[in-house]
Amino acid sequence: MVIINPNPEPFFNNYRLIKPPWAIGNVFVNGKFCKDPKDVTADDFFRPGLNVPGNTSNQLGSVVTAVNVNNLPGLNTLGISLACIDFAPYGLNPPHTHPRGTEVLAVLEGTLYVGFVLSNPGPNMKNKLFTKILHPGDVFVFPIGLIHFQFNVGKTKVVAFAGLNSQNPGVITIANAVFGSDPPISDDVLAKAFQVDKKVVDYLQSQFWWDNN
Image (cartoon, rainbow, N blue to C red; front, side, top):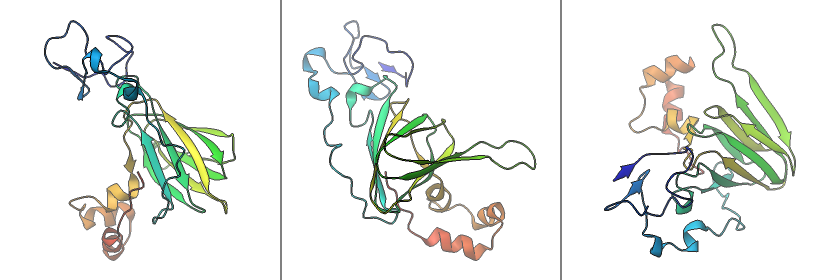
């Protein structure tokens, strides 16, 4: 039995990873195997380690530690997930989108410049940018599907937590997707789209596009 129910109100009971008593054979909900009730333990609803700083020694100076249905089975169909984001000084979580989730971000430590861009408004109109400088205790929301970013503008590290209203919100990092795809997007397409010389496109496509997730 296969059931797809990514985020609506829960069904069966309060434990989406538990096989319902009326089911015959194996049950998979959103591709996740449902356990026999007698095999379920507290560990299925538990994930340790977010107190351990992430390794920000990379080109971006940031790392995202996600907690979603892939590493916390008890989240299946509950419609939520979270992430801890660590930033080195001047570290960046580059422009990206979550196609299946709205994000609300809270800063615990440091100073963070954040923003998102609205969808295309209309002919000959520019996409509106909303930005804010966040300090410890500040909260900012990024609407579902919109391009957004976070940048550490301080000289000390930043720690932030993000909650998302999807068990598996997904992430598309814009630069990686456009210039680091496999196979590469035609340089004719990108040169015309970005109105630059093909040499610029070739240079960008030759770079290593770091994934901080």
